[in-house]
Image (cartoon, rainbow, N blue to C red; front, side, top):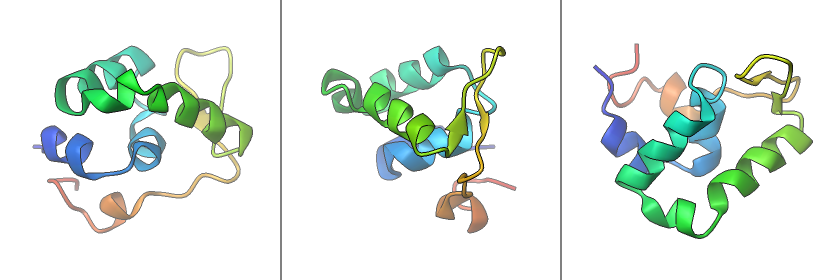
Length: 87
């Protein structure tokens, strides 16, 4: 089982988006930041980071509600190191 609280509290906004955005709708990610790290929302960092990742080609928007992994996408370290219960 994923330890979502510690992922959202300890990892960077960019890494969280790189891992969750291709599989989780943006409003759900937003809600998790509201719950565990509200300053990301209140300072506008979530939307800014999401837009930057699209501009950098790490995520690609399409006609589907979820973005796809872009040509510059790289798996975050917390995923490759299998932290927080990631398998």
